[in-house]
Structures are given as C-alpha cells and as structure tokens.
Length: 94
Image (tube, rainbow, N blue to C red; front, side, top):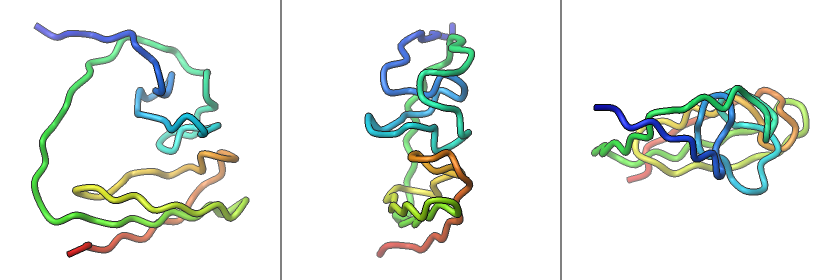
C-alpha cells in the first residue's frame, strides 16, 4: 500500500523535491516557490551507497554558484535565486 503525502513544507509544488528556505525557485524544475499543482506524492527515503560526489552549479543568468555534496550526482538544472538555467560539473570527493 502506498502512502501519499500532502506535506509541502520546504517542497516544490510541482516536482515535490526539497527546497531550501531561501530558494525562490525549484532547483530541479524551475517552478517558482509556492506554485505548482500540489498533488499528493509518494514520500520515499532511498539508501544509496558509493563514493561521494561534489557537484558545482553556476547560473547562466545571474552568476549565483553553489556546491552540493551527495552520493551520486545532483540533478539541479535551475537557479534557486532567479530560475535561470545552470551549468554543472561533478567530481568524486574521496
């Protein structure tokens, strides 16, 4: 049985990914904070093992840059400050 959540605290209303409290746009789909369909979603926690990656994202429009350290690659494609597209580079962090 699937448990569908309706808790959108610090989540995108479109893709349901987590958002930082300072984000104005979703880093993964570009939806402005507080907008979207807000449909119920399946809230899953997955365990991933492997070498940590450091992904550096830089906005093509405003120049905002940030690093994400996680297992696997971070799929952000949009700037959380202006919603512009970002370029990303990843490297293993041994």
